[in-house]
Image (cartoon, rainbow, N blue to C red; front, side):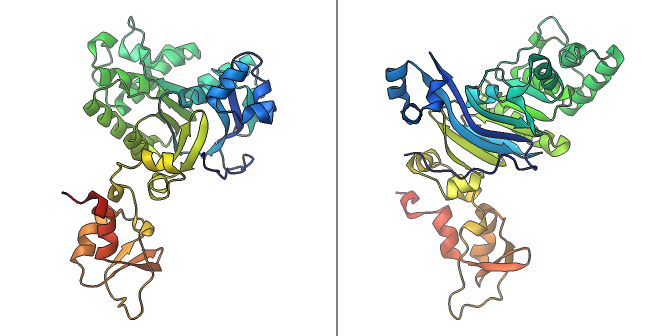
Amino acid sequence: MTAQLEYPDVQDADALLSVQGLWKVFGPKAQRVPRRPDLAALDRADLLAQTGCTAAVRDLSFEVAPGEVFVVMGLSGSGKSTLVRCLTRLIEPTAGSLLFEGEDLRAADEKRLRALRRSKFSMVFQHFGLLPHRKVIDNVSYGLEIRGESKPDRRRRAQEVIDLVGLAGNENLYPEQLSGGMQQRVGLARALANDPDVLLFDEPFSALDPLIRREMQTEVVRLHREVGKTMVFITHDLSEALKLGDRILLMRDGAAVQLGTGDELVGAPADDYVREFVREVPRADVLTLRWIVRDPRPGEPLDGPELDADVLVRDATRPVLEASRPVKVVDGGTLLGVIGDEEILAVVAPPNHQPA
C-alpha cells in the first residue's frame, strides 16, 4: 500500500518550482484517467486492461526550494525520467499544475517555453549528446551561440565553466579524444554555461564505470557548493541519492511512495517497500544522533561529553564508546537527551547483522 504523503502548499512563495497533482498518461483518451476517480484508482495492470492507457506519472505534488538538490529515485519504469521531462514540457503533462517562480508553465506558449529552456533550465542527459565535429570549447558554448551571444562573450563564458568542471587544457580536443567521464564533464559544462536557475539531471552517470561515477558524484557536490544551483537529479541508485540529495522523492509505478531527507527514508521508512529499498544502507553512515537520542534515566549523570544532534552516528561511535559517562546531545545549545554504548551499538552492530 502506498503511504499517504503530506505535501506542502504549492503556493508557498519560497518554492522555486512547485508541482501539484501532476499526471502523465499515455494512451487513448488519456485526459479521462485523472478526471475519473474510478480510473485514477486503478493499478497499472488494471488501467491498461480497461482503458489501454498507462499512467507514467500519477498525481505527484512536491516543491523544490531555491538552491536545493532534489533527487527523484526509483527503479526502471517508476516514471522518474518521464517526470523530469514533464517539468519543462519536453513531454506534455496530462493534468496538474507546474509553477516556476510563480509562473504557470502549462500556460506558456512555444516562444516562452523556448526562452525558459534557453535561460532558466538546463538538462544533463545520460547520453552525452556532444557534437562530434566540434571541439570541447565549441560544444560548451553551443547554447550561448543559439542564444545569439557574440563569439568573444561565449568563448569567455565557456572557458570559465571549462575551468570550473576541471577540463582546463582540453578545450581544443574533440569528444572522441575524451574518456566517458570527461565527456560527461563537457555535458555538465555546457549545462552550466547558460547560467540556468535549475539544472535537471536525468541519470547522467549511469553509463559510467563505478569509479568514474563516484568521481562525478563528488564533482556535482563540489559544484553545488561553489555555484549553488538548484538541481533536480534523477537516479535509480540509492547510494547516489543519499550522497547528493537534500531531499529524496521515492517513486513506484508513477506514484510517490515517500518524500523526505535521506535520514528520514532510512530512519522512518513509510512502508515495507521503502523499508526493503533501504535495508542494505549502512545506517550509521546516514542517521544522525537525533535519531537515537533518549531521555536521561533517573539519577543518570549529565556531566559527560557533548555532541551536536546532527553528528552522524558513524562519527560519534568512537567518542561515545570511549566516554565513561553518557554523552549529551544538544541542538543549538538545548539539551535533547543522552546516548551511550547501547544506542550506538544498536545502529552500528544490530543483532540481526552480527557475524555468524
